[in-house]
Image 1 (cartoon, rainbow, N blue to C red):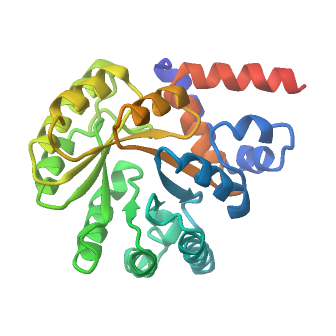
Image 2 (tube, rainbow, N blue to C red; image 1 turned 180 degrees about the vertical axis):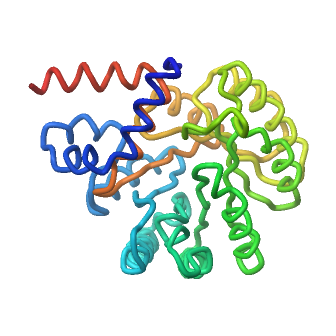
Length: 307
């Protein structure tokens, strides 16, 4: 794990519009970014989804967050509807679902943002159900947690298979796991990727891992469907132990430990790859650099080679 100052600096850079504009228009950065992002267009991402779906499952994410106006929210919604239509037309819906960020659908807009994003998410859920797949609602920073879970509850009234995401580094997450561990509830448990204050989040790696283990035990003994999002071999081993004899899935990010992904799939475990694509890749990419020093080392090494 990166030292706190370096991780904080990378996450701060993820919020910089000036750095974002420079990076997203840099031809030099694109080959490096492709390790973690499946291109900038749907036509670039779908062949990768097809390849992954031969032995794994996929969650496609059209990248974007914190849209500035209603037009941006509507544009993101349309992009997801197009994506879902293509999944159905190309026979991918059985193995590929979609993940959505509510801030990309208008959650933070003034004058009724949560209602706007919930309405847009409902359109996406309806389209997903029509082609035979599911939607998972991503979690963002802690200030949006209550609003996001409220939207999930609303969506589940019509689409009970809608997935929720919980972040183990938040102090509240054990209670959220208990609340969401009911019959049929799909819950993705991850560690968390935002720079949160100590008042609401564990900031020490050991404390985050301990929280993840406690949360995982709650989900694995509940009646829902756990989606275990981690690259940590010890946590994966714990999931396999706790999940023996019940349904659950493992999840990893595109570009991270691909050999381990294949090995787990070959061993008969349900493995899903989180596959992002889109022109607005910069914030996502910077958070990936902030999570693991190996990612930053790869980036710097590759970038220097491209020079």
